[in-house]
Image (tube, rainbow, N blue to C red):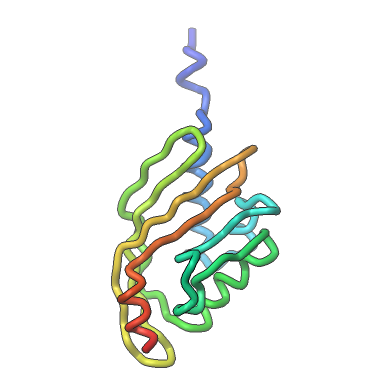
Length: 142
């Protein structure tokens, strides 16, 4: 007889799989697949109170999130984006990413760890916060 618990995916498992799909879609430049993981009213922000780097600040709602990715693509060449670690609970996933990029306008490179916080409701990402070494990013754009 099979134990039902061993065949049952938890919310934590589903949320981890969602974040992994999102990162794979980002790597593959598949914005539609990224957006498929988000709730329509997602609260999305990297360095939420900053404006010094093009992708900083809030992006409210799924329709605004493509502007975040467009700001990255328009301004930098990402040469490394590696998932370093993950932790999760029933509602949230936390990841550490190492990324390296070169700014088109200045030719300067930044290489750092950043943290991503993903919150889920009803199987979709409803909240995202990213933080990074903003001093290094700002210097790369200067």
